[in-house]
Length: 199
Image (tube, rainbow, N blue to C red):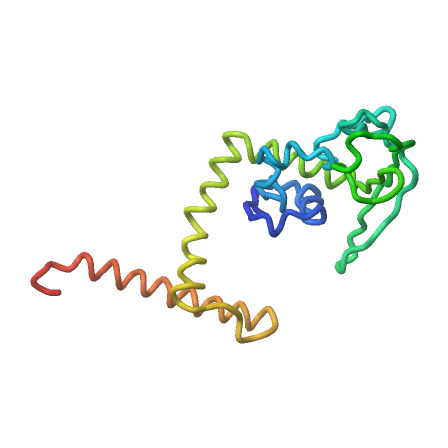
Protein backbone atom coordinates (compact mmCIF):
# COMPACT_ATOMS: atom_id res chain seq x y z
CA UNK A 1 0.00 0.00 0.00
CA UNK A 2 1.22 3.56 -0.61
CA UNK A 3 2.40 5.55 2.39
CA UNK A 4 0.76 8.78 1.18
CA UNK A 5 -2.34 9.46 -0.93
CA UNK A 6 -2.97 12.76 -2.72
CA UNK A 7 -6.44 13.56 -4.08
CA UNK A 8 -8.75 16.49 -4.75
CA UNK A 9 -11.78 17.64 -2.77
CA UNK A 10 -14.11 15.19 -4.49
CA UNK A 11 -12.59 12.46 -2.31
CA UNK A 12 -12.60 14.41 0.98
CA UNK A 13 -15.39 12.50 2.71
CA UNK A 14 -15.50 11.23 6.28
CA UNK A 15 -15.65 7.67 4.98
CA UNK A 16 -12.50 8.08 2.88
CA UNK A 17 -10.61 9.79 5.69
CA UNK A 18 -11.60 6.98 8.06
CA UNK A 19 -10.38 4.33 5.61
CA UNK A 20 -7.03 6.04 5.11
CA UNK A 21 -6.56 6.40 8.86
CA UNK A 22 -7.40 2.72 9.37
CA UNK A 23 -4.86 1.71 6.71
CA UNK A 24 -2.30 4.12 8.21
CA UNK A 25 -1.97 6.05 4.95
CA UNK A 26 -1.11 9.74 5.15
CA UNK A 27 -3.82 11.71 3.38
CA UNK A 28 -3.23 14.90 1.43
CA UNK A 29 -6.90 15.20 0.53
CA UNK A 30 -8.88 18.41 0.47
CA UNK A 31 -12.54 18.52 1.54
CA UNK A 32 -15.29 20.35 -0.33
CA UNK A 33 -15.18 23.59 1.69
CA UNK A 34 -11.37 23.77 2.04
CA UNK A 35 -10.78 26.71 -0.31
CA UNK A 36 -14.03 28.48 0.53
CA UNK A 37 -13.37 28.51 4.28
CA UNK A 38 -10.13 30.43 3.75
CA UNK A 39 -12.03 33.41 2.37
CA UNK A 40 -12.75 36.43 4.54
CA UNK A 41 -16.47 36.15 3.73
CA UNK A 42 -16.63 32.58 5.02
CA UNK A 43 -14.74 33.39 8.21
CA UNK A 44 -17.15 36.25 8.95
CA UNK A 45 -20.34 34.15 8.65
CA UNK A 46 -21.66 34.00 12.18
CA UNK A 47 -24.04 31.13 11.44
CA UNK A 48 -21.27 28.70 10.46
CA UNK A 49 -20.39 26.23 13.20
CA UNK A 50 -16.78 26.27 11.98
CA UNK A 51 -16.58 29.83 13.32
CA UNK A 52 -17.94 28.87 16.75
CA UNK A 53 -16.09 27.52 19.78
CA UNK A 54 -16.48 24.01 21.16
CA UNK A 55 -16.06 22.99 24.81
CA UNK A 56 -15.00 19.34 24.76
CA UNK A 57 -15.38 18.88 28.52
CA UNK A 58 -18.93 20.25 28.61
CA UNK A 59 -19.75 18.98 25.09
CA UNK A 60 -21.29 22.32 24.15
CA UNK A 61 -20.97 24.81 21.31
CA UNK A 62 -20.96 28.57 21.80
CA UNK A 63 -22.20 30.72 18.92
CA UNK A 64 -21.00 34.19 18.00
CA UNK A 65 -23.71 35.75 20.15
CA UNK A 66 -22.42 33.87 23.20
CA UNK A 67 -25.40 31.50 23.39
CA UNK A 68 -24.65 27.91 24.39
CA UNK A 69 -25.90 24.96 22.39
CA UNK A 70 -26.26 21.77 24.46
CA UNK A 71 -26.09 18.16 23.30
CA UNK A 72 -29.50 16.56 22.85
CA UNK A 73 -29.12 13.20 21.11
CA UNK A 74 -27.14 11.20 18.56
CA UNK A 75 -28.35 9.79 15.27
CA UNK A 76 -26.77 7.41 12.76
CA UNK A 77 -26.85 7.11 9.02
CA UNK A 78 -25.20 4.71 6.61
CA UNK A 79 -23.58 5.41 3.27
CA UNK A 80 -24.24 3.19 0.25
CA UNK A 81 -21.15 1.16 1.08
CA UNK A 82 -22.30 0.57 4.66
CA UNK A 83 -20.07 3.09 6.46
CA UNK A 84 -21.84 4.42 9.56
CA UNK A 85 -21.80 8.15 10.30
CA UNK A 86 -22.57 9.25 13.85
CA UNK A 87 -24.16 12.69 14.11
CA UNK A 88 -24.59 14.65 17.33
CA UNK A 89 -27.48 17.08 17.63
CA UNK A 90 -27.20 20.30 19.64
CA UNK A 91 -29.75 23.01 20.45
CA UNK A 92 -29.57 26.45 21.97
CA UNK A 93 -31.36 26.92 25.29
CA UNK A 94 -32.74 30.21 24.01
CA UNK A 95 -32.31 32.37 20.92
CA UNK A 96 -34.99 34.75 22.07
CA UNK A 97 -34.06 38.43 21.60
CA UNK A 98 -30.73 37.45 20.03
CA UNK A 99 -29.52 40.43 17.95
CA UNK A 100 -27.64 38.11 15.56
CA UNK A 101 -30.39 35.56 14.91
CA UNK A 102 -31.43 36.93 11.52
CA UNK A 103 -27.83 36.60 10.33
CA UNK A 104 -27.41 33.20 11.97
CA UNK A 105 -30.48 31.29 10.78
CA UNK A 106 -33.80 31.72 8.99
CA UNK A 107 -35.42 28.93 11.00
CA UNK A 108 -38.01 29.74 13.66
CA UNK A 109 -37.30 28.80 17.25
CA UNK A 110 -33.95 28.06 18.84
CA UNK A 111 -30.89 27.29 16.75
CA UNK A 112 -30.09 23.62 16.17
CA UNK A 113 -26.96 22.10 14.63
CA UNK A 114 -26.01 18.57 13.62
CA UNK A 115 -22.35 17.64 13.73
CA UNK A 116 -20.25 14.61 12.93
CA UNK A 117 -17.40 14.94 15.40
CA UNK A 118 -15.35 12.41 13.44
CA UNK A 119 -15.72 14.49 10.26
CA UNK A 120 -14.61 17.61 12.14
CA UNK A 121 -11.54 15.80 13.47
CA UNK A 122 -10.60 14.48 10.02
CA UNK A 123 -11.02 17.93 8.48
CA UNK A 124 -8.84 19.51 11.16
CA UNK A 125 -6.14 16.92 10.47
CA UNK A 126 -6.40 17.44 6.72
CA UNK A 127 -6.31 21.23 7.08
CA UNK A 128 -3.22 21.09 9.30
CA UNK A 129 -1.34 18.90 6.83
CA UNK A 130 -2.47 20.79 3.72
CA UNK A 131 -1.28 24.10 5.19
CA UNK A 132 2.07 22.68 6.27
CA UNK A 133 5.18 22.88 4.10
CA UNK A 134 5.13 19.10 3.60
CA UNK A 135 1.48 19.14 2.53
CA UNK A 136 2.05 22.01 0.12
CA UNK A 137 4.94 20.21 -1.58
CA UNK A 138 2.88 17.02 -1.96
CA UNK A 139 -0.18 18.90 -3.28
CA UNK A 140 1.96 20.68 -5.87
CA UNK A 141 3.26 17.30 -7.07
CA UNK A 142 -0.28 16.22 -7.82
CA UNK A 143 -0.93 19.37 -9.82
CA UNK A 144 2.21 18.99 -11.93
CA UNK A 145 2.21 15.21 -12.42
CA UNK A 146 -1.33 13.83 -13.05
CA UNK A 147 -3.43 16.95 -13.66
CA UNK A 148 -1.85 17.84 -17.00
CA UNK A 149 -2.34 14.25 -18.21
CA UNK A 150 -6.01 14.31 -17.21
CA UNK A 151 -6.40 17.57 -19.11
CA UNK A 152 -4.75 16.11 -22.21
CA UNK A 153 -6.92 12.98 -22.16
CA UNK A 154 -10.20 14.75 -21.47
CA UNK A 155 -9.90 17.96 -23.48
CA UNK A 156 -7.36 17.28 -26.23
CA UNK A 157 -8.12 13.59 -26.82
CA UNK A 158 -11.86 13.93 -26.20
CA UNK A 159 -12.01 11.08 -23.65
CA UNK A 160 -14.98 11.98 -21.48
CA UNK A 161 -16.36 8.60 -20.42
CA UNK A 162 -15.57 4.91 -20.52
CA UNK A 163 -17.12 2.88 -23.31
CA UNK A 164 -16.91 -0.43 -21.44
CA UNK A 165 -18.14 -1.77 -18.12
CA UNK A 166 -16.63 -4.04 -15.47
CA UNK A 167 -13.26 -3.43 -13.85
CA UNK A 168 -11.29 -5.75 -16.13
CA UNK A 169 -12.63 -4.08 -19.28
CA UNK A 170 -12.19 -0.56 -17.91
CA UNK A 171 -8.62 -1.44 -16.94
CA UNK A 172 -7.98 -2.59 -20.51
CA UNK A 173 -9.52 0.60 -21.89
CA UNK A 174 -7.33 2.75 -19.62
CA UNK A 175 -4.31 0.72 -20.69
CA UNK A 176 -4.93 1.38 -24.40
CA UNK A 177 -5.63 5.04 -23.70
CA UNK A 178 -2.44 5.59 -21.70
CA UNK A 179 -0.41 3.62 -24.26
CA UNK A 180 -1.69 5.88 -27.04
CA UNK A 181 -1.02 8.97 -24.93
CA UNK A 182 2.57 7.91 -24.21
CA UNK A 183 3.25 6.98 -27.84
CA UNK A 184 2.00 10.38 -29.01
CA UNK A 185 4.20 12.10 -26.42
CA UNK A 186 7.19 10.06 -27.55
CA UNK A 187 6.49 10.86 -31.21
CA UNK A 188 6.36 14.58 -30.39
CA UNK A 189 9.63 14.35 -28.46
CA UNK A 190 11.33 12.43 -31.30
CA UNK A 191 10.12 14.97 -33.85
CA UNK A 192 11.65 17.82 -31.85
CA UNK A 193 14.99 16.01 -31.64
CA UNK A 194 15.30 15.53 -35.40
CA UNK A 195 17.78 17.77 -37.22
CA UNK A 196 16.09 20.54 -39.20
CA UNK A 197 17.26 18.95 -42.49
CA UNK A 198 15.29 15.75 -41.76
CA UNK A 199 12.05 17.41 -40.71
